Amino acid sequence: MKTYPNGPHDLGHDCHAWLIPEGQWGRSNVGLVRGDDASLLIDTHLDLAHTREMLEAFSALTAGRPIRTLVNTHSDGDHWFGNQLVAGPDVEIVASAAAAAAMTPAAAEELAKLWRLDGPLGDFVRTVAGGFDPSGITATGPTRTFTGSLPLDVGGREVRLVEVGPAHTPGDVIVHVPDARVVYTGDILFVGAAPLVWEGPLSRSVAACDLLLDLDVTAIVPGHGPVTDKTGVERVRDYLAYVDTEATQRFADGLDVEEAIASIDLSPFSDMAEHERIAANVVTVYEHLDPDRPRATRVEQFSHMAHLFHAASAATTGAHS
Image 1: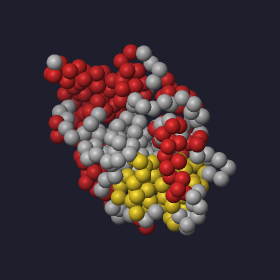
Image 2: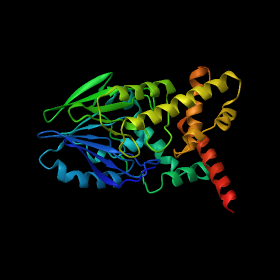
Image 3: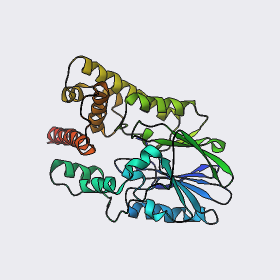
Image 4: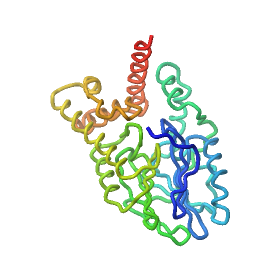
């Protein structure tokens, strides 16, 4: 994957991104859109330290144009756990109604517990999301919700929120800045790593990619990874469509989910990191093909991925010993 620096990136037209390389687990991106006398922040980080660093760095850009609106693109903690550092009487926090329903103190505590687990699952989380400390989080959810679409006035310029979930999560939202030809996608896009679909069906994520491809944009800020263009969207779409087709065929052939995960050839996407995400993606496909199948919890999905991650690590270690 193309390397890129940590920190602020000027996209032009008073649009900015804060990127954490290399966009792996927990290393999410944040957006900033400035109007004449106010700014819009798009997402916060997984912990307070990273959120504080980002806000302090953006303070020069928001002087005289304070953050009056915070949009959370979805309900995963690495996109809203830092909200408490932005919240206040003069700040509106906006998310889709479906995302807001999942942005609860219980959800925050469940994710934070993963760092404290013993065994392979805890080891996996601490390895792939090392460098974050989700302690001290006060769950700070939206003060305004919507469904469908919502136009926002940001200091005299229009920003469009478009709900594209359920896809990655139940309530994904993209943030489109038409006059700048910029869009912030949240975790509809992972660039340089395999996309991840917790909620699905995968066809909804494919449709979200199609919507992005139809927009008149030149700069696309993914939820994780470097700023991209439409070729990055096409790559994610190709992966999602491929996994959906391959998993669906294996379901029709009677393979159980573990057999399906093990047998899907990901070599066409060898440039992508985090191949363990195939486990969660296949589980999602199977759940939608079989409505009677119990929905896996987030911990169960993480456990599937942890197993693949540790198996791949052991294989790599053995190959080099």
